Image 1 (cartoon, helix red, strand yellow):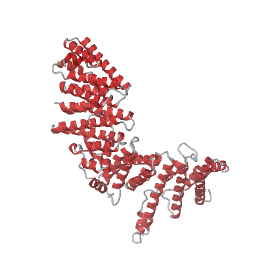
Image 2 (cartoon, rainbow, N blue to C red):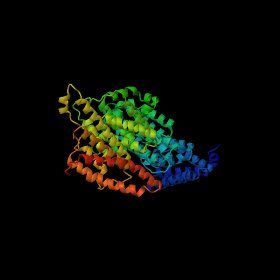
Image 3 (cartoon, rainbow, N blue to C red):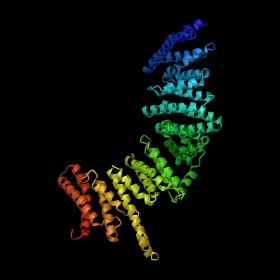
Image 4 (cartoon, rainbow, N blue to C red):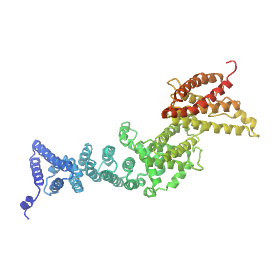
Length: 607
C-alpha cells in the first residue's frame, strides 16, 4: 500500500495532528519563535480537545479510538529518524503534560503516553527532562492516572542522570511526595489507578537504588539516606491509602522493605527512631533552611513505625527486610530506654487519625508483646537523664488515650487500655504521678478522667501497701519507719480532686455531663482521707484543717446543693433523660454524703 493510500485510511484527527506536527517542525527549523510557539500551542489545544472528548463520554468507543490513533501518530512522529533534535527539544516542553491526560482514556492510551515520554527521555537531556517532568507533576488535575506516565518517565530519567545525582533526586522527591499526598487525599477507597501510581513510585525508589549502587563515598551515603527517608514516606502513604486492599498493600510494602538492607535500615533502628534521626542528619546536614525541605517528608517516623508493624503482621514482609522480629522484640524487652524510644515512635501510629484501625490494633499488640513477661526496668546508662524521655512518653500516652476514647470497637479499646497501663508501669514511680497529673489536666472526656483518677488511686494504694509491708518488717521496722518517703502521697493528689470538683472556670462541675469524673474524684478523696486517718499520717495534707475547710465549703457543699437540686428536679419525671440523670446521680450523692461525713468527723470541734 502506498503512503498516500495509507493516509487515506487514517482517522481525520490523526491526519490533522500529523499536519500540525509537520507545521511545528518547519517553523522551529525556520527559527521563527513566535510562529513556532503558536503552532505548538495549537498542537497542545488539539490534543486536549481529543483527550477531553474521550474522557467526558467514557462510553463513546469512537472517541476512545480517535484518542488512541492521535496518540499513536504523535509517538510515530517522534520515532522518525529524520526528526531534527531542535524540534524534539521544543516539543518536549509541552508534550509530557498533553499526552499524560490520555492516560485515563484506556490502558492502550496509557501505554502509548508512557512510550511518548520515554522517547523524549531517550532523545533529550536528562537534566532538562527531570525539570520538565517535575513541572508537569506539579500541575493540579482531577484524575490520578494523569501522573502515572510522568512518574514512570521520572524513574527512567533518574537512571539517565550522569552527574550531581543527589542534587537532582533531592529536587524530585518533594514533587513526587506532594503528588501522592494530593491524589491520595482526594481519592476514594477502591480506586485501582492509585495502585498503579504507587507501582511507579516504587519503581522510582528502585531507580534511585540502582544509582546509589554505582556511587561511592559521601555521594553514596547522602543519596542512600535520602532514599531511606523517601521509602519510609512512601511506606506511610501506602499504608494509609491502600490498606483496603490487603494483598496489593502488602506486596508494595514487601517491595519497599527489600530496600532496607541496602539503606542500612534495621527494624531495631527504625522502631527506636535512631535510623530516622541518622538519615535526617545526613540529608539536612545541619543547615537551617533544610528544615523546610524535611516538611515534605513529614511522615517518615510514621513510615518507620509502620515498617516494623508490617513485619509483625506478615512474615513475608519481615523476610523481605531480612529481619528476625523475635530477636528485635527480645532486644526491646531487655532495654528500658529502647522500649521508651519505641513507645515514642509508636505514638505516630496511634495519633494518626486517617490510619486504619486494624493497623493501630497491630501496633497495640506489638507494644503489648514488648512489655509482656519479665522485662528489664533498669536504665542501661546511669548517667542518662530520665526526664528527657518523659515528654515523649507523655505524648505517647496521650495518643494511646485517644485510641481508648475513639476506637471503633470494644476489643481495640480494651487492648489499648492494657497497653496504656503497661506503659505507665514502665515509667519510674518518681515520674509516673506527674505524667498522670498532666494526662488528667489535658483531658476533656469525663469517662477518661475517671479512668485516670482510678489509676492514680490504684498507684497510691500499691504504694501504701508497700509502706505497710516495709514497716511490718520486724528486722528493719524502726529504721524504715523513719526513712520511708512517699512518692505519690503528697498534696498534688488534692489538686487533682479540686480540678474536677471545683473546675478552673469556677463553680461546681456541670452535671450529669461530668458525672463519671466527679464520682471518681469523690472516691479518690474518700480513699485518701480514710487511709491517712486510719494510718495516722498526713502525707497528702488531706487532714490539715485548712484543707478540710476548703474541701467542705468550696467543694462538697456547692456540689451537694447542685446534686440535691437536680435530684429534686428529675426524680418525679418519667422522661427517659430524667430517669437516666437520676440513675447517674444516685452513686454520686451517696459518695458525696460519705465524704461530707468524713470531713465533719475530722474537723476540730471548735470549728
